[in-house]
Image 1 (cartoon, rainbow, N blue to C red):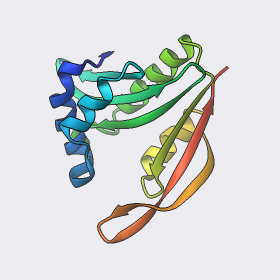
Image 2 (cartoon, rainbow, N blue to C red):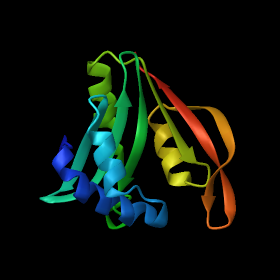
Image 3 (cartoon, rainbow, N blue to C red):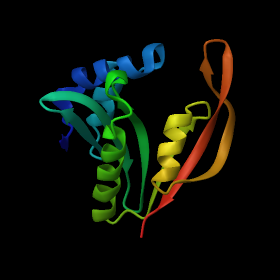
Length: 147
């Protein structure tokens, strides 16, 4: 089940983000600040009654950007992320969006595969954009054209 994410759920989303991203996770304040914007849309995925993942998008009239997207590690590889992503794509399409952008660490192969399977295409890279420990990692920039 997928439901819209609300400002009141920021603490819960911060916990889910920390489970997925560890030290690189967004804080409660960052998530709250993003959700407080009228242009931020988000959805929360559930397994039964348990919240297990979410996606946040910054939306403009013609385009959107996926700000962050995660599924709790113990619920990954169960198509929850795929359903959440497809839900977000459909919602932005219904609002007249023509493009969705995102960036993801180049070494996050599972995410890259999911985006490519969902129709996103690689349009560029940002060298050494992320740090994983002491190791710099490129950001892959993806775009989905919505018809």
